[in-house]
Length: 599
Image 1: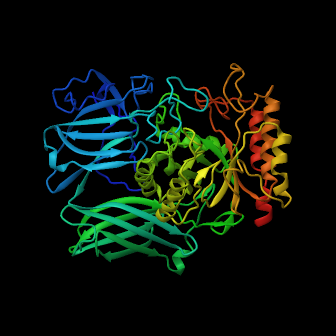
Image 2: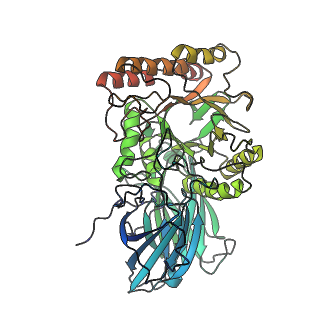
């Protein structure tokens, strides 16, 4: 009987190929507490793997079948793959994410290494596989959340979860898959669709085994087609001769086609199918991928963010992306969509994806539903005063930006969150500044917050975190700026406001759990549902009524383990009566002073 494959959907929705093989499911597994597995020959075919694990769920999760919460230095995975004839084909092995440092062997041959727990990576394994025969795939993951040398996000550095730190994730936590490609193929692409200009700019990376990126690829052409997903009609198509392995192409709508196009907007997401074909001189299709795009323009003005020349007040929710049975990994694709729908039902139009890089399938649903998101690295755990902080952080962060840059739902980047002084030393300003500058170089189209909440060095948007629960005290902090005075600045000894758009990117966070009075949250738990609703309304309206505040973000969407301050339970169930949810929704949908002033 064939096993049921968990998370069976295609994992890379912006670049889909027809022929692929999902490697999720049951793998052999072994703990390596001493990180001595390589010396002991765990990569060799006769090594003992005493356990089984369900990939892509981490061993700390119940869905993995392991459910071990203790620290582990390294873990090992193994499975057999069978391959058909690969004549004139190349075989690419993809990993959605492995936390943290990964090494891969195929048939005892080391095929590559990768460092970074949140970014995707792949290896060409054509040279070491045997077609029509069994091949042994071995994966090792090394992880040390207590080292201070790797971004870990909200993974607890202590044995137990505590406060706002949660269960750890070790090893494979996103889909593993195989893909066959021709000798010359489309390796990557960047999509930028402008609503104002009614054009799609494509930067396509081609890979040829025998050529460098800058080498000419004679007698080959790249063709792109934009189609309406409903009518299937071709709206724009263009073919260009390939000059090198880095090829640009522009799909420019004519006057008649421009009238048919619709913009991508918050809550009203129009997406269009995009097909890329690589052809030879006889017109034969060598490689083909399916994608999509949404026409939208971002502009950050001094007062706030504009989308397609319209001011947009960001009503955001903090989303940690944890699941009770999968930890970092959603149990199924529908769960990713459901989280967005839970948020939107309460009147939020987006989220800060907090201290975790979310998988591409989540961003796909955000694109589909018109949901605004901020991309953030899981920067906690990294000691930015450490000499290697830049080299440990930057390569992975650039991989993340490159992977996710074409999603219209992403409206900004935030590489760091609350980079507090560590080990009694002030963090290096140069690290924060350099990451900001490189982020702007990698993506000039989006605003960047250098480090959210407490220590701005160089930033496009000035944001603050404030968990004051007393509604009078909270309102007093923002009163002066509402009346034209100086804005409220947290930690003035650390940072200075320099006229940027102003974002309250964390507030609220009151715990609510009728059966657990000691649940962790900010401030005192409200005495009743009515008090919670009143506190939510008053805090939120303080921000909505301030014309100089362009965005807010409430903490948070769901409870996460002991942190019981979500608007839903950890299991995504209702915590409050319908009346409370109705009041939250009514509050969120009120027109903000920002919108009244600038619309």
